[in-house]
Length: 289
Image (cartoon, rainbow, N blue to C red):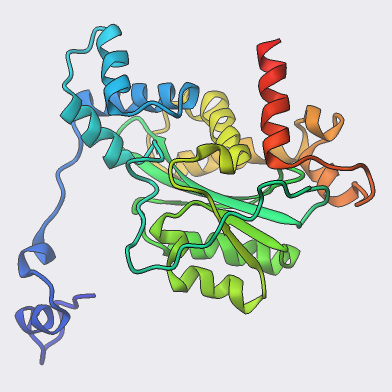
C-alpha cells in the first residue's frame, strides 16, 4: 500500500492518509530459529493425527517427547503456522459475512456438485510456506493449488479462478471461516457465478474432512519425506505428487478409480451417494476395524 518512491507524497503523508503506523512500513520480521522450526514440524505432524488437540494437549505431547516447552510458546507456534483450526489458518474477520454450512445431510453423488478449499502450512528445511487447494468433494480430485509465503487473499483468488475457467462452476463451494474466504473479493467471484457458499462451523474440522485428509496424505507421502530447501523445489515436488494423486492413485471410495477417472467418467446415476457425515463415519468404522 505504501510507495516509498513517490516524489510528491512522502511516506509520512501516505501513512497518515491510510491510517497506518509508520514503523510498520520499515519492520522486517525476524526468521524463526531452528529450534522453533523443529517444534513446528512436530506440532504439525501430531495435528494430522489429532486435529482436536489444543495448546494444552500439544504441550503435554511435546513434553512427553522430551521437549521442555511452555504452553505460551506452543500456543504462539500453533498460531503462527496455522496448523490447527482454533488458532490460526482460520482467522475470521469481524466485518465479513459468515455463510451457513450447507452440506449437512446433503447427498453428494456427482462431480461439480460441491467444491471445497482450505489452507495449510508446508514445512521446509528452512522456514515454511502456505498452500491452498481446491478439491472436488465427490471425486477427491485436486482441481487447483497455489503456494504463498503470506496469508493474503491473492493466492486464494488465483487458485479459485483457475478451475472456474477450466471446469466451469460447482453448485456449492465450501470453506472454513478464514478471512481469505470470507472477504468480498473472494465471495464476490462465487456470487457472480451464482455458486452457493457454504462455510464450516467454527472448530469443526470434520465439516471439511476430505481436504483435511488430503493434507495428511500430502505431508506424509511428500513433504515429510523430502527436506525441500527452496520454493521452486517444493513447487516441483508438489506438482509431481498431486499429478500422481489425481491420475494414478486409486481410491476405495471411488470403487478403485482415480480422482481423474471418477471426475471425467462416473455417471451421475451411479448410486445413492453419501452425506459428508455418513462418509466420515464409515471411514472411521473401517479404521477401527
